[in-house]
Image (cartoon, rainbow, N blue to C red; front, side, top):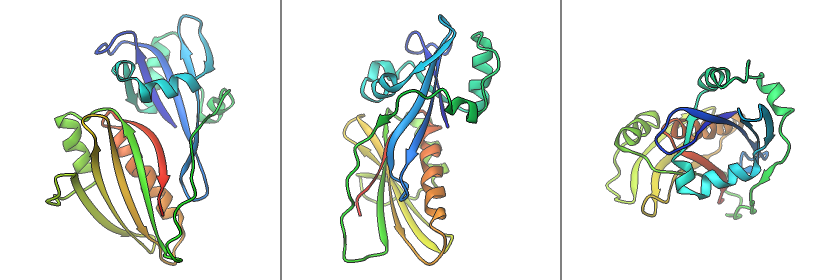
Amino acid sequence: MDYYLISSTAGDRTPAGLLVEEFVLCEDYTAAGIDGAEWRPENGAWSSSAELSRAIRADRALRGRVTPVSRQEAYNAFARMGGGVLPEEAGLRTLFQERRTLPTTAPLNLGGSRARRYRILFAGELGADGLENARTALRLEPTGDPRVIGAASADAGGHGFTWELRRIGAGIAWCVDVTARLGSGPVTALGALLHHHRQAVREQGLIPVTVERFA
């Protein structure tokens, strides 16, 4: 699950609310939707977060009030806000009221190729420290392409993977593009790699938008 603290004003780290989200993934690890719940201290109750989930990805000003955090940080903040003990994740799932569906399209059929191409899309801006941390977490090396921050490759679970971090537009969005050359091993290695990359970049302050598949 992903946890976010919501403050009253941009730049204020004092939490005024908590957002909990979980991506709903298809069998090929693309994102079909986002489940979630929002908690505010003024009413002390959980409510639907579908509108807030959409807004933090579309509204730059609102995004300035959002801080991605770990579960432990969310646990501590929830107690400080008067919520008591943050429910375990199984309990949080029972609080999800409305799914925010994401658009999905069938990937291109490239003649039976075992290669798959994915894009993990993020909203937000990376500062210098966040960019350097992302480079380290994703083990990126320079490519000489000004459109690409860096690229890397690895073999895992009998498959070959390459990925690169790209900026989209001027401060509009970022993405990690992943190419998977599937072998004979369990495809769960692909899901684990996509999850790791999504979380590694999220930890630098960006908000994951979706996981798309192009081929």
